[in-house]
Length: 132
Image (cartoon, rainbow, N blue to C red; front, side):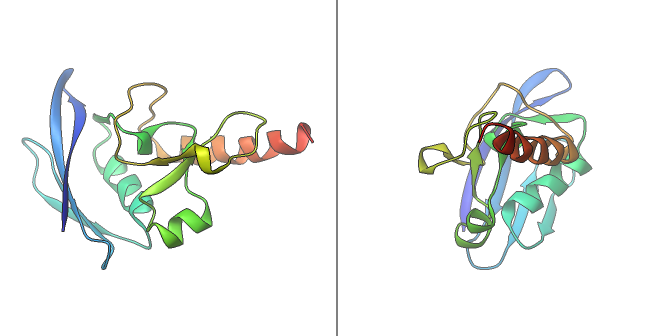
């Protein structure tokens, strides 16, 4: 079992959430101060974390998994259980140097809505065609 504290912004103040997960069964347990503990399951941790963000729209999670231009490839989803993803740049193909851990600290370009990330990812894919 891995236990990770991540920085959050809650009611305008910096605080911490605790995440518990295991590489075996995909189950992400989240503990946010003042909120009931919840466990999420899905096919990978990136998707579980997306559910967390949907359930807590008033919480800003300061980590790579909340950054608009971070999205897992199928390989990251399958081989790293969605704990790793690509941090992409507009018009540029992603490489190994762009792989990030979704629970690592980040405070720039964060979004709470996972659909915004999905839309960005789709538009980024189109930007690759435009630059080839």
